[in-house]
Image (cartoon, rainbow, N blue to C red; front, side, top):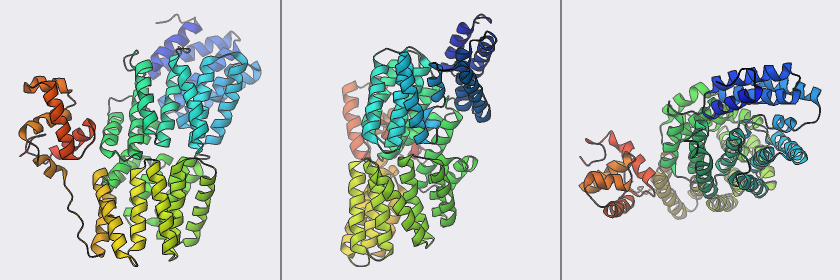
Amino acid sequence: MPPVDDPGALIGAGGLAYVDDRFEEARAQWEQAFRLLREAGQLPAAARVATLLGELHWGGLGNASIGRGWLERARRLLDEAGPCVEWGYWELARLACDRPDMVELEQSAERALAIAATHGDVGLHMRALADGGYALVCQGRLGDGFARLEEALAVLSGGEVADPFALSTTACALLSACDRAGDLDRATEWLRVVQQLILGPAEGRPRMLGAHCQIALGGVLCSVGRRAEAEAAILVALDPGSAATAAQRVLATSRLAELRVEAGRVEEAAQLLAPIEDQPAAARPLALVHLDRGEPRLAVAALRQAVAVVVGDVLRQAELLSLLADAELRCDNGAAALATSEQLSRLAATSDALVVAGFAALVTGRIQADQGATADACASFESARAAFAAAERAVSAAEAQLAMAEALAPTAPEDAVVSARAVHAAAIRLGVDRLRDRSAALLRRLGVSPPRPVTAISALKELSQRESDILDGLRQGSSNAEIASRLFLSPKTVEHHVSRIFVKLGVRSRAEAAALAAAAAATLDVPGRRP
């Protein structure tokens, strides 16, 4: 225990407790440090500790009201103290990914950046770059945003900052930006850097950063259509032993619910969402549940409320507005859908994110199709498909192609069949049952039998006994060397078998193979083996 009369020691001990996810202990240490500093008249230092307590309550302990109270105490102390570097830390008091207004976050980061320059505070400079970069990415300004984030990453990787709190919050903003943008290449690199520089040396601490890594990875994998791997990452974050914060669990639960809807498990998704329906992160999967149940008006209400909350977050708004226009058309409210489309087009005009342009073109096409302008609609759908494909949004690209097939069906059935079959194949490969079923239904309406999908069970039955044994090892998370030792094989032989398993199952990674095996295990007599 640190000396109870030494504020510096108490702050340090609280920081160590924080990164070890011992939040109550951190709270007690920082509260004692705050009292001592305030009594000693050290107002800037007391305000800095009050800011830490505000962040702790709001983000770590889930006490938003208490968090706001501590931040207000900090502001009053800073007003009395006058200009000082602690104002910069107050500006960035909440985690970037927990703040709903991206314009306000950008402004806070700009003020913090100026304060950091005045006082030569490298840690604050790094945090301000990361938070500002995240805000710009969310606003759809990917070029400017990632430039700042990469500068922050350079500071982080250069070893100029030792403060674990500054390092973890910066990493949070970096990974959140990759998540929001669906940038798999950067996410892969940045996760490796975070593991090497922060989590690895500290033996996995702070654990809530490790949970955030899994959630961010799951979000990026969802975006690029790697559903099985995404689910595996999200489930790690939702494990009872995970140190995920309340806000992180809401986000992870929402993403898991969306995966359930796409897999056709709508009622399971509804059960997951029931406790968090009031959270903006739950709006999109909740709207999908309502649409599946034939409740478009409820979907419209949920989406409109969410769009109003995520101020300046162009990437989130675009995704929500696209679904909102679809729901409005299902309510036969073409005027509302047109207004939504115009709003989305305005967002696309301010953004360099291809995915925003894709959503704008998709909604334009839906409205044109609703008005009977088939040729114009198909051109818009193709524009949307191309934008989504370039942004590596495979599921959204398939949705645009299916919309085109549906528009073509009355006048060009042969073209519609070609597009619908392509969507059907993509939906099976991506594991999106919702699209698979819609494309199959369209094919049947056109008088064509949809291709019979290769199920997980039938694919597993095609494996040899040796391949089944090795797949069981993958399911358990074993390395090639561990599998080789258990089966009395060489690691090279196991590597060759793993490659053949990937081909037979149509997967691209060990995680996908393991997830497929786990999903089918309950149906098989012996997990990982052929019956």
